[in-house]
Image (cartoon, rainbow, N blue to C red; front, side, top):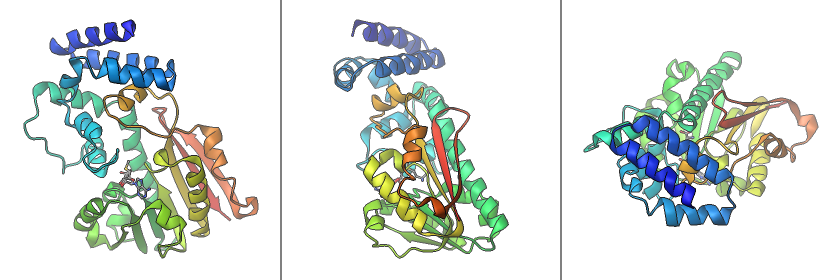
Length: 305
Ligand SMILES: C[S@@+](CC[C@H](N)C(=O)[O-])C[C@H]1O[C@@H](n2cnc3c(N)ncnc32)[C@H](O)[C@@H]1O
């Protein structure tokens, strides 16, 4: 506990003397070390009794990204507005942000988890383009689509080369944004949850590409496996399924789980492979598993025979 206080005091000194980048770097590295070396009970205690009691907390909350994550105004973590903050999307405008808040945001939105999330968006857009290049007018489904920001960086979407694009999300407010921003591309929006999909409440079939970015990190193993099988069965022959998940022990984990109140279900390669267990091997033409360069997110791509 004493070490954590020493860490926070050192970071505080740096941050108040405007040495923000160095202070935040020390905080991210230090909190990660504490988090991975603590039991869950000890970590929860440190967060509540040490991290939240230190005056550094109020300065950190001058960063609107961290503050929104922590406050969860939509009732859950990782809403689509937060993702827009990570994407540095043009819709994000910060009023009344302090100088320190701006600099802390520069750090948090450039931290390695944020970079990986931006990569995920770009990768999804590239996959949409690739599928549109090999299948005429493909039918695409994004599960837990948020604001569907990959649409605006996909060339195939802009060139109207997509046959059908469906986005599903539990959050109606996010779907309104999609309708306003991308309705011109002809997107079908379904305000449904994963459980609705599993119960067969959504009319879905024959997709050339299905992807879920930023969803599996919230799904317990049983639901995640059931969803994987369900989505695989919604693919047309030769279709692809892409699932992304944060991996354990990432650099940002301590900061995310404390000051951001952002708790993810993390999966390594073995756990990702297990998600495919319900799918009959004869139905799988191949699969690809890789971790992106920043070492935060693992991607599983499964190809249907
Ligand atoms: C981290 S955001 C990712 C949004 C988008 N895919 C992206 O990468 O920008 C997570 C999204 O998952 C949605 N979500 C979380 N749990 C869900 C569930 N059980 N059913 C449907 N949507 C869910 C949230 O509403 C939110 O829009």
